[in-house]
Image: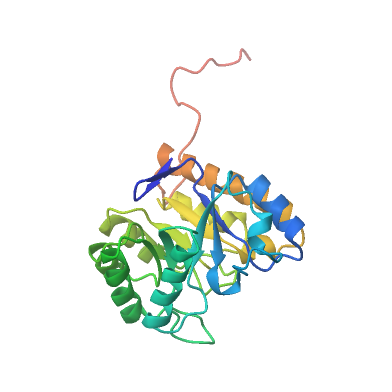
Length: 256
């Protein structure tokens, strides 16, 4: 179980709702993923419920919506989008994105920190998407974030975790949950994130962009579960030389 703010989730996998070939494919992928929290880009949702909308294809009795400020390039725009999500009754939880560069889609951490401070004071449960910088992660926690969401690699790149050390340092430095977000490409990437001690993983493109999104959603569910179990179990120490698995004493020898 993962606790984010005052919310408790049994699933440590959070998934996005964009880039699917159809709403039906998205629905099937969400179902097999086991996720309880799904993120939606406020800018891409038709809030006029008299017309077909993404929200018509998400069972709100089964999933908690996590609106996000994707596509926002300024603090003011991100804060305005968060207010819009709240006014539409989506959630007080907000995945906060303030993008600093169009090509890399890397966060503008200064604007992100300022937006986190303002929204947290207004009662939002802020879940900021940030770089894998341990110092910034701590500052976001101090600003009132209910978790920190460092990237594994640039959004949609599928490169997996490029800097394991920084993710480990973030996990050591903050007390709020750490959810690895962006850059996951396949199940092994999700497992590695969890084995490092992350509290959860959020992904979209890795599932929606797979040749078979439904199978990949199931693979990601199992990978997150396996990675968490491995972390909790405690891996063996890495050794330079071999270490025999069979005991040297007490063995029964065959009669020649």
